[in-house]
Length: 259
Image 1 (spheres, helix red, strand yellow):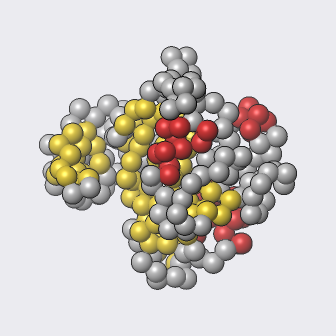
Image 2 (cartoon, rainbow, N blue to C red):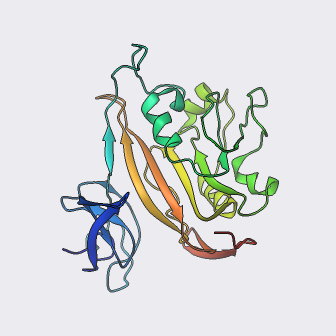
């Protein structure tokens, strides 16, 4: 079996919490995970084994997929008997909140906090563009690294408005433009071995930045006629960061060597 991402034959079963997960493989060459019957989320870009560029719409290139680790169905009830619905506020939906809270490590930046408070045994710094929202600061995520020391956080949670309608509905018309710029900011703020957890309509996450490795891709279903919310978890593995911008690579060197 070859890796669907880099075409390497150096693959093995994933080990999770010291147990072998035989439903998921990990490539020792590129570090990505996939399933044997991988019909996961297609991702554009990357290279095949001979080093040539590929894209999802290339007739001659190899299609690349992001394995989906879990699909969480919508609906059900909480312990108090109330219906579960993934609606306006992501973290008021119990599966989404529990998913994030289970993966918070160390000092946390909630970059688009909204109104829901997450529970964690360490500090959570809340940012929200709306000055009327309860938060520690109110800045554009595209400039958020200017307000902190590089490598200051172990986890960044990024739950932005996914589109114009959601920006109007969820953030009173305020929105943060330039998601790629925001990812570049998070790369400066997350220390090595830290995580970035992203919610959105696609599985891109931190894939533009070479210092990060995908750990999980999860789908939160909303209904038969609505798009799934896609959650990505990316782990930072390197001190030097290469950010891809419109075909050009830019290398950033962080000022911290924390591990």
